[in-house]
Length: 220
Image (cartoon, rainbow, N blue to C red; front, side):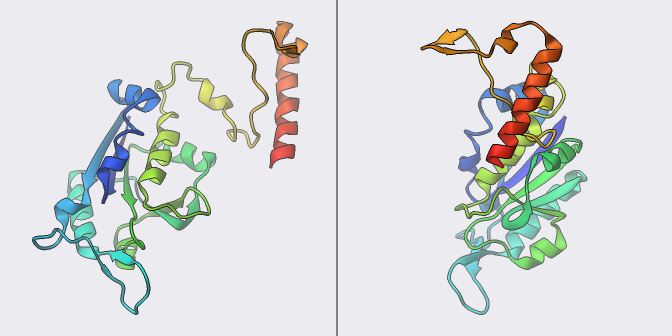
């Protein structure tokens, strides 16, 4: 079982991606636990302020250190986290190898950036890992957090109906997946490769490996 504690300035953005399909079934089975924490509950003053202008000038607001420090410190009194991850465009690029590694942990905190980002002192004080899901900028880290939870969550033993399925996903062995087919065997004159209908497991595996290599070389 893996527990995720997600800190967000806009927690409603996290509700739908983690409340359906495989992720919801994982939660129902008790294999995945996700708690979303509203940073505004720790905001400063009567307006629950969580952001302010950046020192030195420049466009964009910065998430203040005090609200983040308070919520992170409070969560850390309840459990020991294997990783405290900040979702940021300048982080290490998230990939399947990283997902595999993180899936071995039991407790992970995710901090969703917003506005221009978070005060550097929070990164220095608390963050143990910084992750980017790609070389582009989102409005906030919530969608990135949902991607990370989904990619890790499906690797938990028992989450997928066929546990071997995740082992053959694209990128698990450094290759993209080969073409896949289902019924009917002939659709609009386009036929399923004969080898897949042969019942010969050795030939099928060789075909899939060859097509996976071709697919990877062509697309990557």
